[in-house]
Image 1: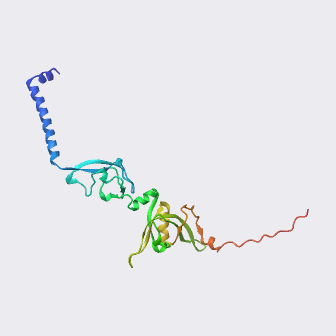
Image 2: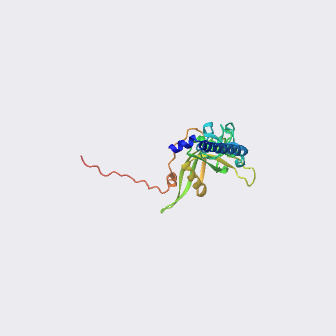
Image 3: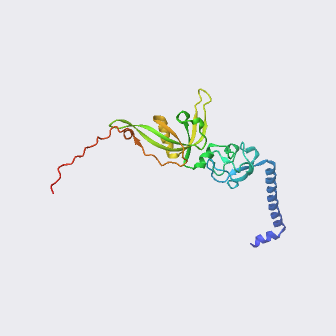
Length: 246
């Protein structure tokens, strides 16, 4: 320690510390020069995970500087350009926000409409020729879907009618040509989507427009025999035997 104190108070010590200080200042000067010589731009970065259809708020975003040469295409730089818009695709925290990720609020985007119904819904398309008066439907109309599926067992070939729930109309696409087919885009609960896909593949779909806005409860599966009475056991006649003597 005495040797260090002696060097620090000597001329050589002052020269040493001065050289270190000058080196640090030179490094800061070079860093500042290089930073200023490389153009940079502000970009918006997602601060947390955002699901499809979520409405962007200022709290969801942060601003980050990146070299202009590495600026992603269509990257947004101002919070005002994104606030109040909906997310078209799911984004993770740290992703750069781009124009293609956003859909204007109120523009009828599918992701926004489905997200408004809840996370348990998915958008699916139904052929227009299966929907009664499809060209007169409006977004928000409700459709009751019933699937009729073939059932084979050891006794006979039969069919079963299964409720697929109530779907909400999102959009209606009318046929514009001979090869273009009409379709109705609806929002349906997750658990009903595989049933609808199976019905469209191997069964028959029945669609009814629901007049009451209140959704009905699930309809139990009905066997063809139940609806037609075929195969039902014959009624058993009940006879009374002789009454015991009193």
